[in-house]
Image (cartoon, rainbow, N blue to C red):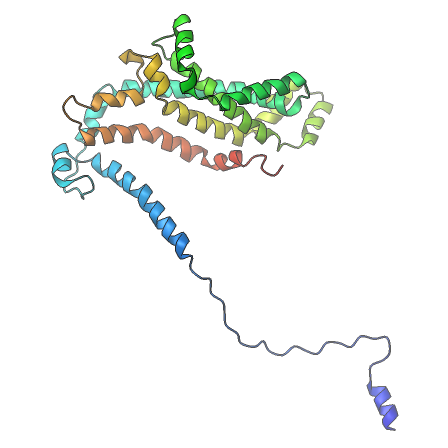
Length: 302
């Protein structure tokens, strides 16, 4: 009897025993993330390094020169004034600003027009000459402008371009082109090859593929090289210093010297001019920042 009851109550052969219901979870300690003291300290130091110069630049531009000399550079101003900005705008600063805009816009246009077809040929062509041309172009990344300024000066004078904006535009665009081609070719490698094959099957030629397919998909890369070229052209100093002399073609990097006196320097006046010259760069960055990271990380996964 005991044998039969044991047999009937036991599990049938070939069937899995259901797991026992789990009991209530035991109360345990919740692990809290430890604060990264080293990282927080580094972030605080970096914030101070960045914030103090910006504070000095912004506050000093609204101070009078006498208050700056008496109270110190980092003191909280008691009286703010816009006389520095009015004096800057009444000087030759607008002309220098316009020259900078023309130089930067021309350099960006030249680099974008030349870099996109070059990168498209590098990515899609299998020709040896294209590969060798890309290798020669990469040598431009290793040649600093200071090393070729003397032959460049001779070339500019022989072409009768000295003291013109073209003397600044052409060398600046030439030195920005190698990096632009490298960044843009990495961006074009992210475009699937099936899209190119589909466009060719539809009867599109190389020019049509470049305009209808490559150009819309290469906007992050184009925005990236456009921002970098604009920064390089806007902050250029060597080419304007050596290849220009007339005040009518002077750019901002040289024009800021006009606010330095013979026997002293009006620091609030210079900071106002510097702050006005930084505003276009800030606007360009804010407009193109969403494309900047995508362009810099293009081709990273390959």
